[in-house]
Length: 149
Image 1 (spheres, rainbow, N blue to C red):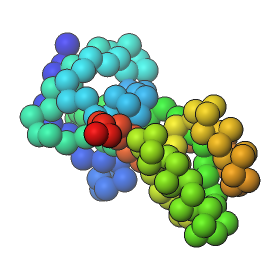
Image 2: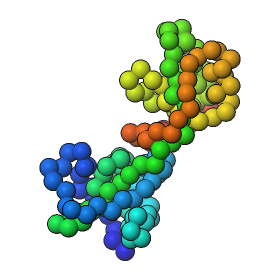
Image 3: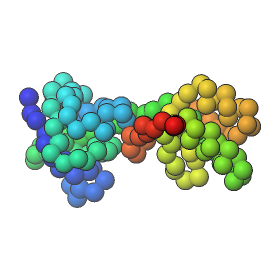
């Protein structure tokens, strides 16, 4: 088994790639793990033990030679894509999600949170536009540990 300790680069920034690419399909939650065992879409088992405290991202090249590359592909998450139409709606939902310590990401005027039926019900009650969709996220959702005293 090959052990990967550093990332070669990312397919979006490398000037050239070999003719054959194997994929490692990962849920976004696994992007933050520095040590893990994965299997490529060709059945090759890979160990990941990153020396740097760096998170994986979609498109990272784990290994490459002249003929082959092994690339991380993030699986789509089940998301609520929240599209508030006013600052008031944005403030209301941000406050509610903050009270729940629910991690969110922001992309082009949209707030992304992992699907939760209670949040969906809240969005309906507050009449805040949203849609549920499967989408790749650029980074893992960060769960925030916090308690109210």
